[in-house]
Length: 469
Ligand SMILES: [Zn+2]
Image (cartoon, rainbow, N blue to C red; front, side):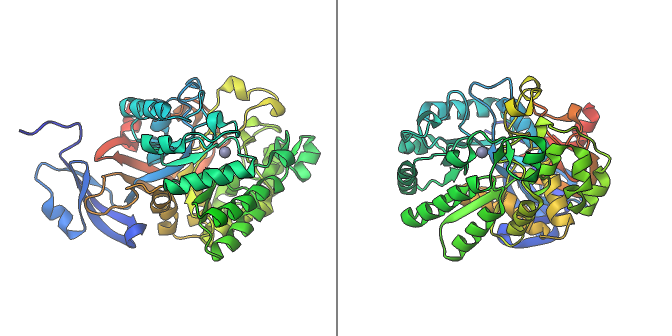
């Protein structure tokens, strides 16, 4: 007897440009999905499709493995006024993401097996994309005592990190690396040296002086990146540096990778699009560093205005200089930085609508990261489309040992369909996130998800959204 499933029996995607970097595939072909799996790809797909299969014509669109964002704050448990598993995964689906990894700096922190189980259970009930969990490195993310890493691994975490915070004690970090290696878990690190950064709120440089704001020096990140390289070398653990912002970090990682150190890193679109000049307001930004954006981005958005001290330009690590932005782009182009992600960090309006000094760090990003990455990297001709897709699929999947990120026959049918050339405006009213703290509202962007398919089920389409509106 067949049990009816919420999945469609079969779905045939026809005529799309299929890009699967794990298989070095980039060609126009069909993809057949059934029972939640990729069943056939290429000439076989149409032949094998049952007559009852739903057909979706995707001519002119890109069909790729479901995008993975390994750095997302879903704010559960305890901070559901900012985001929930339902709203966070809805924003992910809208951005073209089929899997996210949620960070453990919640309240309470995700530092024990019970809380991991709670997230898995709620995600199964309320989430519309796959939710993987990162556990904390230290108990309560206090940086003093290791969390039960073995227990977290058994509960199913895919990595450990104290993100939002950074373990300052080098011996504790060394021991975290040693345990993580035993359990084959990557150690992800938010690289911030507290003694150098103290209470800095923006990049230490020309603009922090002009604006009278306390500086967060690039060295505050670079020191910890160097520490992490040394500990990865010492312990053999997989160490991953999160949301790189500084040129020196890229140089350190490039040299370390040449020596074969098991270290990796990620970058977020805001760090390779904006600079610290943006904190001085739109007029200053467009008159200076805005000019050297991808010409499309600057031409389309030069009329976009924001005031000085806009807290939607406050994040941690902060927006840095044009030289740092260029170094991040170069690191992405030459493969030093393997992974793209958002650091989606929702906050309530009332929390952000305060003086710059007092606002929390962070911006939302799930719905804009694909477009900004396409614009700054692919449309700007810095990297190829398959290379971009690799940084959102197979590369994070390999780091986290996820059985995801490819379109192999038999793989889970997590598929993203997107239009790399679609022009659209990111509207505040349209965001699926519970929060609205993005610097990119009103921006004209190029490149957009058209359909997001998770385990064979279409969880979001542009068309359905347009009809609903
Ligand atoms: Zn962080």
